[in-house]
Length: 216
Ligand SMILES: CC(C)(COP(=O)(O)OP(=O)(O)OC[C@H]1O[C@@H](n2cnc3c(N)ncnc32)[C@H](O)[C@@H]1OP(=O)(O)O)[C@@H](O)C(=O)NCCC(=O)NCCS
Image (tube, rainbow, N blue to C red):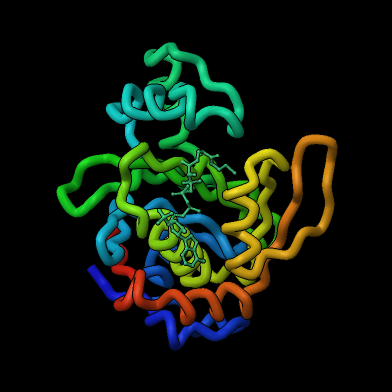
């Protein structure tokens, strides 16, 4: 286990920010085209942890994604747990995305988040869902953990889409410094630059005071 670069030390644009462990992973896997996604066994935060999603998480994910309240602004998911297991089996072989189960301090699953669709040095994140009743700091902490990990992997910006009707979520992203770049009938498209990500990591440092730990 190693401690990633502390939030306050994250400055954009230098691969020197990659932790030694990440560098080792890239070398071991022969990954030269960077930044790139790396699945991690566990990312430790402050009150939360992320762990790599596995086939046995299928029932949890289906329940979360088909919850009437939570499913309003995400793409539709089948209620078929076997199908979800299959998706997770395929995911395990797919190095183009990282899917995390968000856990609370009791190591109970409380949500999901996913990094995918790399475009150059920009990563996309989504599939971001927190169970009803998750502590209110969980949204900010999980977002900070995503950004912290992505910067550690060498990403320098993010892009994502949010349904226009999902107002609390696009407001959340705008408070983080995301800039609207386009809109379709249903969605707003956003980007956020490394400097704005770094500002938010600093501004909200009390939610993730020691940065993240990474276990591969
Ligand atoms: C996306 C999701 C995980 C965000 O979590 P959330 O808890 O709704 O996030 P919120 O914006 O309400 O923020 C949680 C708390 O942090 C506070 N907060 C959020 N941003 C903050 C900020 N920048 N500064 C200070 N406080 C902030 C909020 O006020 C809120 O506090 P409260 O609980 O006391 O009201 C959750 O809404 C969800 O699961 N949605 C369903 C799936 C979905 O639509 N996902 C997004 C697809 S793009």
